[in-house]
Image (tube, rainbow, N blue to C red; front, side, top):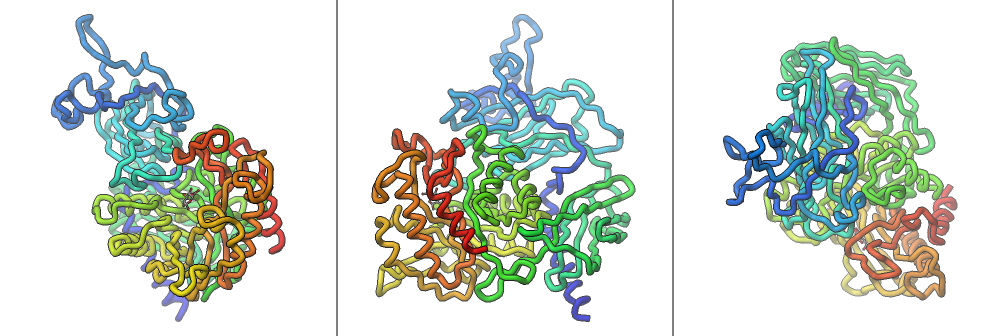
Length: 610
Ligand code: GCU
């Protein structure tokens, strides 16, 4: 009876969270769907004055009944010799999509503003009744999309997917897709004006056309029941004229599981499947199962791992067993192209380094990374902390800023809720405590829990000195009460004092919750050697790691860490010539892929934990 009751409760939670995402019109598992790639060389026009978007009275062309031919999205061509058209995509330079513009064109290295992209293509549907969507893995930061002169929509946020239906606009020949990307930072943005990473602009991830039946599988969420690890529960959502009262078969062949459900009036169906043979996913056993979802018109396939993640007092339990998260932080920067990462090769390189380090965990800072690295983490058995880019001094009192943050959170959870490696959703990083910020974050936590009741919630919280002794640190951030895992960044020996203070510092953490140190570290120029008290030498960084690891190991609730950071990364905050040269040097590996001495200190620490 208890299992049935919990099973129904879990299904209710599930049904609630999927419906919360319906308004999202995102397609689940775009990664594996039948699609036509639009990656490649696109023509582009740099438009710092947004001259192709506004007329000379600063009125948007795309809000006029009869838009001027100077509106770039019309892609107007000269027909008569007297025509005056002052742009031409096809005569303009080309740029690779996906890819940031900063590292592809030297004159765009610092560019912040609008760039227009244009791609022409022919398209013949495989079945006339099918529907077609144009899907973007991400574009940074504000994107406006037009097809054949018609506006499809706008997306805000630089790190999450979006798609628009184009079924009725497509033609067999000479379609032209025009995309306006504006990476200007704004004070109301998410993130806001100040960050410690490079503002890579552009269509930074894959673009493709996805074709679906007229009624198709819009969403599904399939995972282990929270109360019964012999029960796989899930929900599927169809969309289309015949979404209701449809049968859907869900199969996990290797477990000899199949269930057939019928969708309700809203196109939704819940299901559960018992099995005594589940091989639970873990870093030591990254077991993924082929899962098939089949309707009379469609078959979708995914690779899903089944595991449980929870906390019990100050322990993190993976499949009921305490685990220590031996991790490192990572920005989405390619050690191959030195720009925004977006390929499987990029992901293999950096996750390979984490494995080499003896790691089982990665903090994808400070925003959702591309889907390749999350799926590869599933395959390689690396646990993942994913983070919404609510970073530093966001505009806490601005409702639009909140809606933007909530929207990006939803898109992150929507995309990756079936990725077993993701165990923690992080709400924010180093945000100054205030009543408005507490409200803002509390609502995000509530939303995250409603969208996904199966994962842990955390954030890089604030810490303070205890009143009677500055060497005793406490976590008095009000959000500590709401998160499952206490995390904080600390920089003893780098931003706080020099290395000799570490032995005197203690944390007095009173909360009975697991603690992850989400950041610690210091900079070193790879190849610069000297005395360990000389800043920027590899020896200084090496000693900093030794001292910090000893200091942090005294925290009795310590259950993981993601030191800052695996690889040196670009930031406009780091101009020091000959040492930084636009790079934050806290990496354990240089941007050229050369390991520094501190890499081996962290490896030895993790290896000692075997
Ligand atoms: C902060 C912040 C990082 C930043 C790091 C640093 O903790 O979270 O984004 O890069 O410190 O100063 O290097």
